[in-house]
Length: 603
Image (cartoon, rainbow, N blue to C red; front, side, top):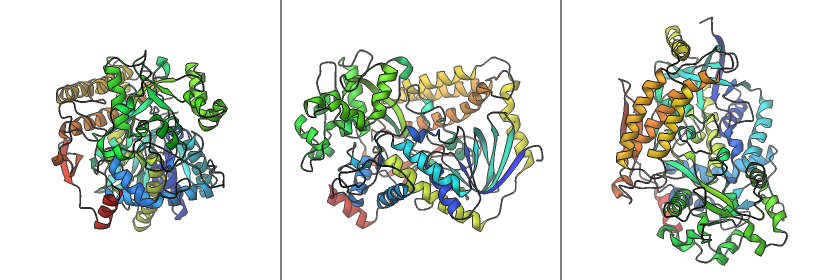
């Protein structure tokens, strides 16, 4: 093992986004030696792209808000497939995590009396999202990074992890390489926290950054961890669609939270056409009432543009399919209309949505203060992921933890906007805390030298292959197929076709070649990412085939209604002894009576 650069830590955190950094802060504060591995550069994690805000029931704008309402909203949005214990912890602890972030230097927008300002967002009953304009994620990463770096973290930037290592049943570390020079590194650790984000790069149109190739999901799966709810992929209703170079880039829900409305090519606010019974008593039935809501009127009801993301995305798809779409296959999102309501509206929009103003001005030559944006759905978030214990965030592999988007449970069938950032804070903290406790109680596991040799040989295979397969071509074929066959609306016939396509692409991926040498070789990195992308694509497709109903973000044209028999269990995935992907069902444990009562009261 002397030929590998070896590092030894108590806790190893893979991923340097919000969840990874919050876990690192907590573990370091517990007095253990911590390392953070990031595929990109520190400060470049995808969390910086989170715009709208962090959901926490502080009640600064509407004092009727509290953790019970937040819990109820989260469970309803997730169609009650959520891990209810996670939803409870999240709702209770989110306000403290936001105040903690503020104490560490985060500069939130303010109410007139100096408290943290909160805005409306889809699926939330009251204004709940603490925000920094539309750059909340960037401020979160800046704050966590500045706070954490003084705690003595070891940070390994631009590294790729190819496998987790185990000593018997428990975790022993990770094996990977530095992307700059291509040298292999052995990371020995008593506990490992996965915080690698999502899988959006398995789809053609996505708001996700290049790192989102399902690394943590695949690493955990191959290490024997169980995954859950992989059928639930959230397609954010508003992404840029024109010009082609910007397709998929996120347009924050904060635009709608500040009064933006959706219109088809005829100028109709089509969201008034289809309001689900579940939300009928909370949704405005007039434009005026919806506008009053966005301005903080406690007696007004939310505009239909702020219904849950799955519903809005499907309504947009309907308008396009029925010929009422915009010129480039989307619809129009208009915030400029508020000039009818607000004097100096242009300055107001620039202040509230500075990133959106500059994004459209620079990338599409559109001034959002005076003309509508052209938008359409974009692959945004995976509710599914690694199955964890609600309190500790540990997987079924001892010493292996997961937090953030790569972990499952909190969001159920659909995530509410803003819950992702509070998820990072609440469960990143818990993962770091319990990983540090585990490390204090255990020694470093043994590493098998033969396994390392095998992993190295597998990682270097693209250099030995001839030039028969281009890794980029395989990746693009996968993205096109997943977008077309396992996208917003699904059918059994198309998903069975996708499974066959995935198996063909697996064969092609084993032949993917990388020219040149190991230094600065993007083709090699892509060939390795392919293994993860193909694994998570198969998970999504198999889980979606198993759930023969439509619920939350999972919509099937051949089973368009909810089916009560699917309302009581989650779909699990694990790796079989022979390497096959095994699908099973797990009944959701009964909710505690006091939590049931909260949900009944909120209804």
